Image (tube, rainbow, N blue to C red; front, side, top):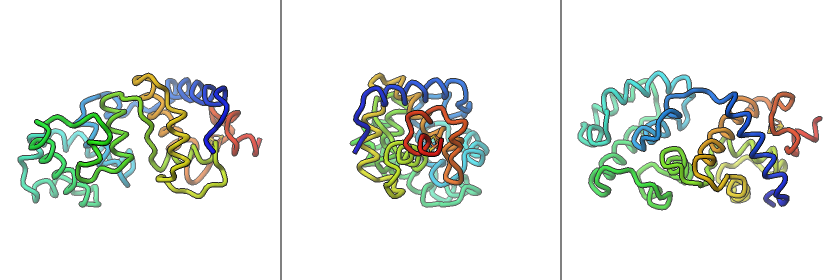
Length: 220
Ligand code: SF4
């Protein structure tokens, strides 16, 4: 069951947002709301560490400054530009996405998650992440890091699964209704999962949401 009490939700949000304002990393894709740049970062971040993506992000965007530039490129050229990041299927999907957006959406990345999901290589997570991070739409998003935090905090008995409907339902209750605050909340919960509540270790002693976390309070 999703968390019932509104006070718990409000406390979780408040604590997470305050922590993120102080501890969130300054990453290049957090400084922009350009939808094309956000899409590129999201494709690169699938299955690749932040530090590695940082090395490739600027180089790729220097080569393809706009979605039209990427759409025009030859597949072999895009693959070559992706060299070092691996999982080339992502490069092929990103290239197809650019072509589709130019052909069917006048070069504008859609802001509606349902429309985004129809694009190549875009699942529920990427669609909602782009809607939130590029357009500040107040939507919940759940990747592996976010799913882990929500599971440990609210559903400690559930098995790891980022497509878990219960976890998504809780994310939807947690996300603030104001778009810019939802942006910070989604970045914050992802950051917590990447740096504090990690797969290897739950560092509950330094966690800002410990007092509202079922796992954290059980180990206190
Ligand atoms: S208190 Fe521990 S288990 Fe709960 S979210 Fe924080 S680090 Fe994760």
